[in-house]
Length: 271
Image (cartoon, rainbow, N blue to C red):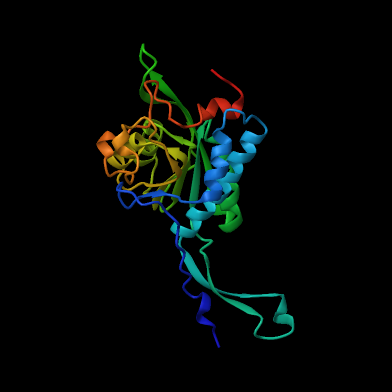
């Protein structure tokens, strides 16, 4: 007899209430918020920085695999099959025959993408998992304000047809870099993506507006929303309720409260 207990496993992600739309997921996880606060603290340096980033992305990627990746029903003999014909696990597993691509947006995205790529290889058939690389930089005006993003180079290892494409990038500030990267995949890379998923440690209201406006199909998963420069009436309201008044970026387009430029912090290269 087949036990139906694990035939349809219901996974519920703990999320914060917001009004940004169904494709935005603000993870409500006290442990991850605590680790993220430690990462962003001014007294945190290497090697603790990269250890925290790797740990945060390990947990975030697992959540996204549970919530977004397709499953299949399986019957897998255990070691007990040698002793009894009932030694078989029957139930849902993540479908291993799914294409997935992790996109490294250098330089802050390099470690998060590697963590994502390695985890995907443990749960999917490795021949279906790929890591791509994009070198991007902010374009600044004379006042050092961000006015766009430019692609300096890319190494894309093939098409994206029916692939889940994941963009792990710690700081979702303006949204310009990720929007440009997603546009590149949509317009220049052959094939139609199954899903586009952005994985961020921190996002701003400005980032969410840019991503949801430019790419309504993209999914956004973030551990924290920062809107520290909003007027007083915003605080205490659910995110997105007073979206037009929410502000998380200073005049240099850095996140407040944020954690500084994560690319600089992770690489000990403050230029």
